[in-house]
Amino acid sequence: MTLGFSVDQLLPKARGGGVLKMGLAKLDESEWLQPNPDLSAREAGFAAYPEGIQISPEGEAPGAELAAMLGVSGGLPEVACAHHEDMCLLTLRQGDEQYRLVGAAVAWPSDWTPADKMGLPLRALHAPIQGYEEQLASGVDHFMAKLKPGAIYGRCNWFIAAKADKRWVAEAPEQAFAHVTSQNAGETLFVRSERQTLRRLPETGAILFTIGIYVAPLGELSADNQQRLAVAMQGLLEGEGERRGAQHYARSLIDFVQA
Image (tube, rainbow, N blue to C red; front, side, top):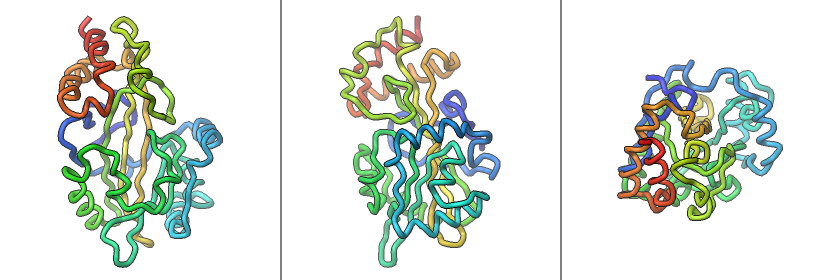
């Protein structure tokens, strides 16, 4: 299965509400990382957000292994600068049952701060996600424990943002979406997709988690995808809409698509 490397390609395969699921697809090597990344955008992203790079001593060896595997001189920061994807490293300490974040090179985080997450186990990392502990935590822990070197798995998601910024910081939704109307929703609502992959490094046993960020205005998406989002709005309003702020943009989105 392929996921693609754009919002239009990712949306049909992405989770955007409802019960939390890993929704993993096995990927070929050629589908792992985006080809021909915009390296000037990556350089600018890290220059604007240098605190996105956080490496603990436990992350040094996996970072060096990853760099050697991809033919990059250096460690995790250099690898992330050479690719479209933000990258995180997780390791399992002796006696622990959960993997912990030991390295992050993240230019475009989706409303999280790497320094605040360093050293945390998986369940604590995902604590802000509504329903994670109840619906997904055990499955994620089991998957991470069983993941074999060489296998690559991917998934994707989407949410609606009020800005096209690659580095997204949440605002109060009643303020962020105050300017959105059914007439301008095509230009003022943006669909943000995270294309995530998981892969175990063979030597250190660390797990690499990559996050490729893709953002597109609602009005530039295919008609099928616009309709898909309009249908999804009702599910958001009935489920996790409050956390996503859906009540502040859903009607405008639906009316724009149906006009």
